[in-house]
Amino acid sequence: MAKGGIYVASKAFLGPMWRALRDNGLPICSTWIDESEPGQTSDWAALWVRCVREASEADCVLCYAESGEVLKGALVEVGIALGHGIPIIWVGPELSVCHHPSVIRASSLTDGIDLARELVSEINRGIRP
Image (tube, rainbow, N blue to C red):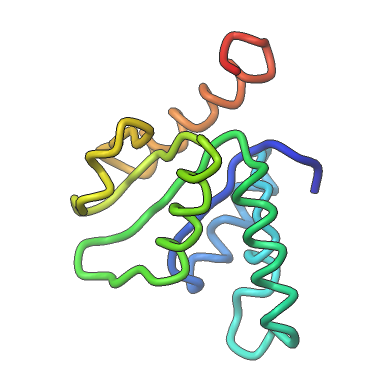
């Protein structure tokens, strides 16, 4: 997928939800969602190279976690985005990273998606860098 869009970071089991949102027009640039089912990833090194590239080129990262979930790869992707000055929309329990000035808290996934759409729209219109 082209540079830009929304990079989604979450537990892998949410891949089908992200694919459905992408199919309904949400500009998701994460390709990991296309191989999120157990056993679908045949080349983990290639997957991580793509994830790093996509997270570092996205317009924003939408990180989603339910209470009690332990994020692993998603936190790596958030760190990559922070290192590249990409805004993070955080939906989930508070972690220390939520205090970074580039992190925007959202109270629900719906609110997070709306914020991500707004950010991408502003970038595409030249309102945001």
